[in-house]
Image 1 (tube, rainbow, N blue to C red):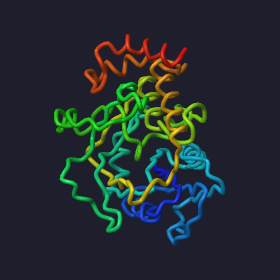
Image 2: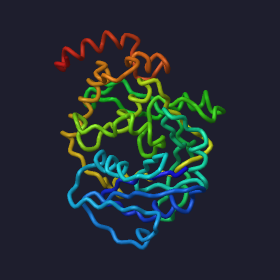
Image 3: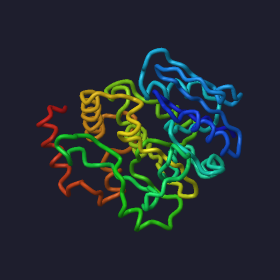
Length: 293
């Protein structure tokens, strides 16, 4: 079965290397769909018959880019990756082998040394687990985020396929059917970029599916920082607005298609870092403070 690899990009220096790596490391049938969001890039890799390039003259944002690529994808599986990632040999076969119809699968994450296109030695363990943060843990940054969960990683280091509460969002893998069930990425409330992983992760868990970490394969991700800067620019205002919307939407159970309320997800992973024991009472306080209905 074919895997369609979606790569949203905006002014990405390492997009050609990422595409080449995805193609070279795949063991099975594959196509790559890079989305040039408001910029142009010329490289011989785009002439590969397995590459299906989408060019958007005007910037529309990451959410729109992913949705556009999914529409033209022919694969039974969809994988999204950032445009600055390297993969393990045969990553596609490993991910396909253990991906149920209502799962999102995340390969373990390590660090990329992009200039030499090699694994960066950080002295740290691979990133395997994330928790969904209590939305009001930092008053200046209200919102739900996928934060690294080192304690869970230490306690469950020998479990190769395991539940993942949330994720960072730079790479995910699922069936095309599950993507369509999720309805693609919403254009309402979140803005053009923020909370991608939280929207899909929460929808999957609260519909009765699973998000899992697969430690049998990996991808190396570049932390761009100040050296490379953001490809996708997002204003502070849009980031705050999207995060506030997401917190209200999920904490107040506004997704009509849900099978479970947010309590189900929190209790499944309890205790969760940053979440207070009286989080339900505190949520009522924040609803009143922020004017949530």
